[in-house]
Amino acid sequence: MLGMVQPTQNSAGALSRLQTQKPHLKSICLQYLLLNSHCFCLLKNGMGLIIFFLCAYVPKTEAGHCKWAEVLKDLERIKTSKDIDVSLYTANADEDEECQELVMRCFFLETEVIIQECRIKNCSQTQDVWNIWKNGNESFEKNKLTSTKSEKCKECEEYEEKNFTEFVQNFEKVIQRDCKH
Image 1 (cartoon, rainbow, N blue to C red):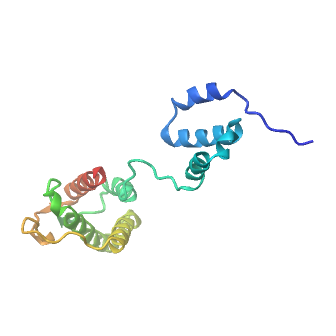
Image 2 (cartoon, rainbow, N blue to C red):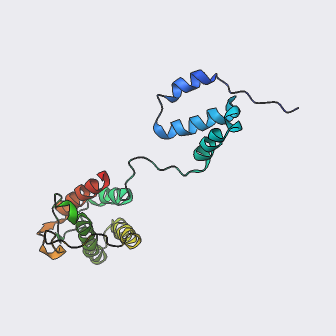
Image 3 (cartoon, one colour):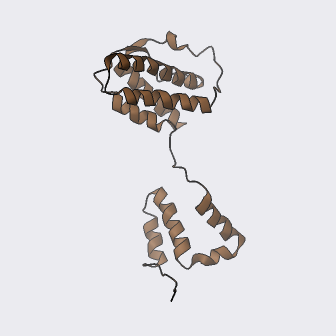
């Protein structure tokens, strides 16, 4: 015999626990409460159907997610490398906002120098450096250059050459700044 499955705890208790959970869990729990409790009555009207559709079918995006998250992870892995000993054109982390995209491109272009260095020296982090370069290029191919070169913005070669450690530190700062916008 088929019967209706009852939630193991009452909805009021579940709702109070819901308020203390992380945001992505709240969404899952809310869907559970709507689907598994006596809230099917919401589906009887148009607004209930809209809410159900939004909860069930709209893809979730994590708040605060940065498109450069994978690059940051790879930078974290390579920044302590003793294998990489190069001087690289290094943009300042506090460049003018309108130069941000061009600064990012410069950092990704300089990763090609690191890749060449790693090929010569057979670095242990070659794959991580390659991932940084690949992720940067893919992102810039998807999002064609939107900023025009301002007179304020420098060419990559106009920046001071710095050691690898300083390069990675500035690169991380620039990415973090970009992620905040």
